[in-house]
Amino acid sequence: MKHTKALVLVVLSLVLALALVAMCGCSLFDGLGGNKSDDDEEETPKDEVAEKLVEDGYVFDSNNKWYEKEGEKKEDGSVVEGTFVNFTKSDKEINKTFIVNENQNRVVFEGNSANTYTGFNIVVSGRFSPVYIELSNFKFEAPTGKAGIDASDVNPDFAVYVIVTGTCSVRGGDGNDGAAGTSYNINKASSNPHNGVKGEDGENGLSAITGNTIYLTTNQSSTLTLKGGNGGVGGKGGDGEGSGQKEIGQAGHGADGGKGGNGGNGLYAANDLSIDNKGIISMAGGNGGAGGNGGHGGHNTDTTAFERADHAGNGGSGGDGGNGGYGLYLENDAEVRTTDKFANVYGGDGGIGGNGNDGGNSTKCEFQSSNGGKPGDAGSGGKGGAGGGSAYNVDVELYKANPGKGAKGGTKGTPGRNPSRGYGADGVDGENGAMGQN
Image 1 (cartoon, rainbow, N blue to C red):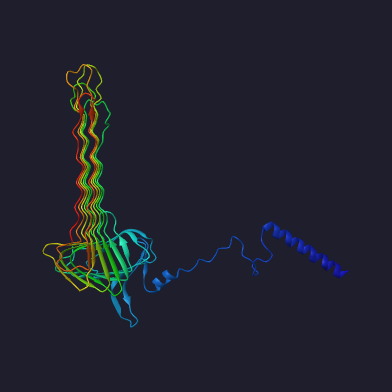
Image 2: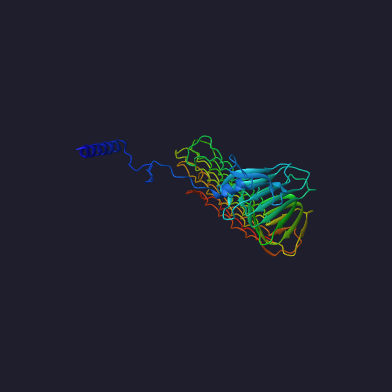
């Protein structure tokens, strides 16, 4: 009888436990080595690369999103001077400028050669002392309007040493595009017609490296590619405004397009250049920007029988294309010293010329004594940009040199028409740009 009562108590206890489990949604085996519930947090995986950087003395710069440290400790306990900047854990899009201040004599930039970091440039502040810029498996492109490495403020009596290890590349920023000129409605019956506004010129591309006295070294089995930025595109010329009120005389003219900017140089040195090449160096100029298209001439819209029809506006001409940049550009008084094995040097291609636009149309009013308003002349095409030379003012033998190609000129517009007096004057197609010089 005692055993029966005990069994009944055990059964009742088990039923009660199962009821409680059902109410709380848990498992009888929770906490006893069973499977984890969905609410359990998974352990965050370790970032071994970041841990190694911290172990090596780097500190994460949360503002710039890279790791940085001052000095490097060697196995023998000695400390090597320098600022070390590591990008191996950075995003590819940097959008930052690193300023090498006058107290920093050596800065080492370390990257991952599988990545090209964009929106990044290096500026060396003005100084009266040498500075060392070292690149290790670091490839980057400067933002628009910025040189890749700008050391132009360093006093020419002191060298800027650029030392390359591994696979590295530097690209100068492109020039800004020119803004389009103000346009008006070519069909508007305006009582005060406006001419279109000329398009702005594109800005020149920037050099990959620019400075006064530059010492460039590539270590064994290393490669360095320098590329100038492309010139900005010329802005479109604005359209002229139409006319249609009595006795105005002239519709608005289309404006000319802006010129394309010239391509940047691969490397620019104003004072002195020394190259110690144990690897492979390639320098290339950027391409010239395209010229902007011209604006359309305004139409005359006079229709009243006894009015005098106005003259239509002329079409704007296309802007000239920009010239290609040089692979290597030295000022006239600069000297160059190099090892036997030099560099592959290429000029950039010219930019195409902008197209001329059409002249406006005119008409003859029914009882007008003359043949009516003069139709607008066609705009001419802009000249194509010339190809950049491989090198300028360089009197040493290059390993390989190819100049840039000249670009095609822009096409002319179509003359305006008046059925009573024919067409306006024809435009001219733009000349093609010349080939660059070695």
